[in-house]
Length: 154
Image (tube, rainbow, N blue to C red; front, side, top):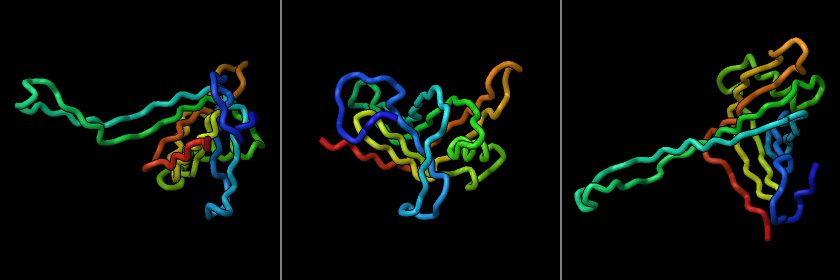
């Protein structure tokens, strides 16, 4: 795992992004945060709500205001039985409601951390594929309220 304890500059490979999920512990002081083994790809989508209106004084030009946000991180991984993070995600496949929520952290290579409290984990594939393929684990980490962003210290 790359060292993200100091602020870095320049370009970087995507694998330097790190993700952790809460796999145990009730309170933030006792929370057990685990990585998820064998993640291969991730993509990030921002779902933005934009209100539009056309006031008379703009002579037909639209005015806009960003009024809502959501984040979905889509992850593809391999199913790795015995890894705490991988097992935890796989165990959410048949859960519903609040039982499918957990805290998630995304650490950027520059040290910035985005914490998603109570993120919804939407498991979309667990083990399905070609007979000769390695079993996948595919899921979305979906924001559930405002995330906490801690910028890297200078």
